[in-house]
Amino acid sequence: MVEERKRTVLKAASYRIFATMTVFLVSFAYTGSFASAASIGLTAAVAKTLLYYTWERLWTNISWGLKTTN
Image 1: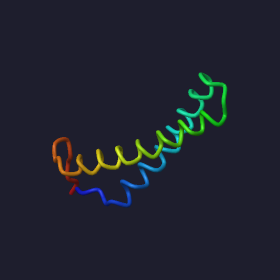
Image 2: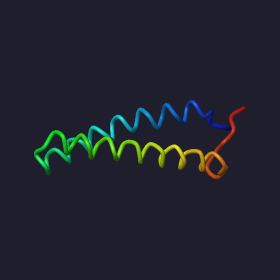
Image 3: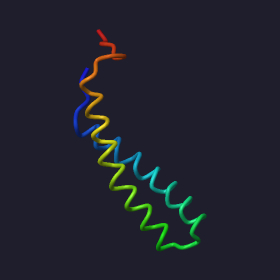
Image 4: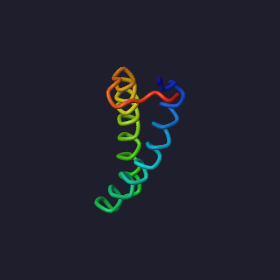
């Protein structure tokens, strides 16, 4: 079983939208500044999207825990 790259990209993008909103809301709660919260959210989104994609691609090379269906 192999995950296609486009599936990995879609998973990363959809998760990143959810997580970015969380980071934005927490940042806004701490700073009280929309601009600061947006800056923190966007910076975190870019960095974490690249990290998540890389992590997922690394795991596609590990067969542990995968089952094949007949």
